Amino acid sequence: MALRIVLCLVAALATHSWLAHAQSLSDAFNQGAALGRSGNAAARGQISGSTAQSTVPNYTTAPPEASYFGSPGLGTPASARAGACAGGPGAAGGFGEQGCNAIDFSQTNPSRRPNYNLTPGDPLLSRARTITADPQAIAGNLAGTYSGCTVQTVTSPDIFETLICHEYRTIENTTCDKILIVTPIQTPGCSPGQFLTRVTADPCPACIDYLAFDFTCGASNYLMHVFTIAKGSGAVYMDLGSQYVPGTLNTQIGQSPGPSRIDGYFCYQTYYSQSCSGANCSIGAWFYNPCQGTSYYGVSTFAMPTTVSFTDTWNNQCAALEARSQ
Image 1 (tube, rainbow, N blue to C red):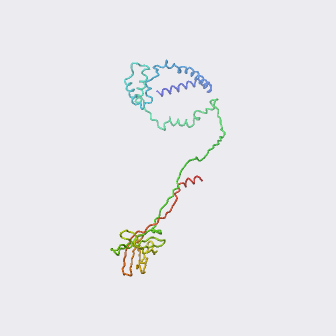
Image 2 (cartoon, one colour):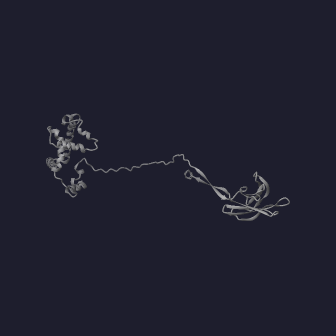
Image 3 (cartoon, rainbow, N blue to C red):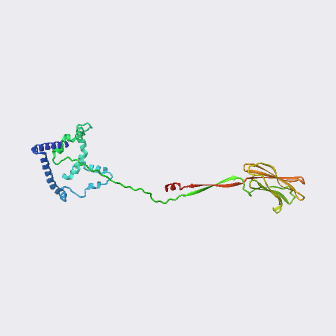
């Protein structure tokens, strides 16, 4: 069918060319344009308004095919319509069967018409590429054929545009913290007046008092205080004196003299010693009565107290913000 239409068009064009050969190309173009304009005016009145409703057979404003719009798939209605038309033309005939004729044609035509295998090297394609590559070589120079076509070279002036941009910093409220970090440092040792330990001895279980040796810290030594304590009340019964003696953390001190008194009323001598292993120390205390030839000893182990010092550092979390504000 397509080949027959092409041949008819070629024959018609050949006949028209023979009849118009006596005229120039521009005259033929003008006559064709005039014919087209006159036909447009007549055709426009036939397709506007209500003319189509009274002219086209079976015209309707609500065709059933309108339901296909927006459908997720046309497979189901297409199969149903093809099945309904498979029985052949109905009783209505004419325009009423045009839809089924088209559907039957689409179903049976692929098996009736041969398939053509066109390769990229087929002359239809290769010659078409030659024409599209250089149409002027085939159709000639159109500018010389039509007087209304002119070649123009248009030069546009340069366009200059000035763009202005602004860069600025927005105002924002930001908080930050400066944190003072205080770190305590504990150092074994004692401060002046700090109590260290008490050494006791009970040389006379039948007596009303017993011996006590108190050691407290001095600036760079110990204060040794010797006295007796009443067993019944726990109060100081007799004060035998105080004396600063050598002593400090982690030192080894042999037997060294403490407070002593020998006169017509008292007769005693005291001694002490220190032995340390790191911050753990032991202090021993002796009490001698040379007048009677008696001696007593007591010992106490203690952990050396610690002194606390502090170091502080600042954690400045505002440094980045301060740098931005400069």
